[in-house]
Amino acid sequence: MPGGTDPHATRLWSAWQSDGTAWLAARPGDGPPDGSVVGWRFAVSPDGAASEPPAGEMPVFETVCGKDAAASGHKRVAVVVDFGDADADAFPGEQPPRQDVVKCVAGAEGATAVQLLASAARVRVNDQGGVVAVDDYPAREKGGAEPAAPAAAESAGESGGSPVVWIAGGAGVLLLLGGGAVVATRRRAKSPAAG
Image (cartoon, rainbow, N blue to C red; front, side, top):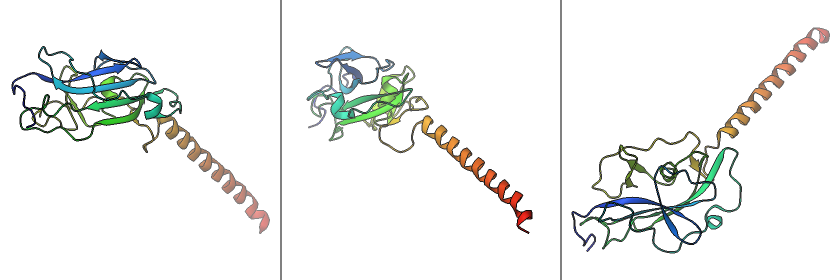
């Protein structure tokens, strides 16, 4: 039966960062550098501190994100979400999502771990910036709000593009309009001579 442990035990989402060989405790407000692997785990925490890192094999950044460099002013981070063990960590009567999240996300260079998490999943945080729920799990946690995301945070490979793309696109449109105006002006200048 899911959630077989103490129903009143403290449970929380904790942040972790890989050093390549082990998970190290991190904070939601930390700003992981480009090429990082950041993990999140929901687990019972008797003392209210991070207790269990993400389970399973630790992802390798290159495997998740490939070898393409981040756009200028951006960073790419591999984000792992472990919803915890159904028997040991879930609240009584709750069932964690069946599949963990492993996703490459891109964000502004100053994006925090929780802002990057919000690019990989639906996230709600409390007033202190701690994660309350990821993809609406646990379901009983109804409070919190979406974290303030940096303007450029987005999933790698998804549509939307970076501000640089939009600026370049806007410049291209202006060039086309300018070119059209020159052509139109030249045609008008030649029209009387044609008559």
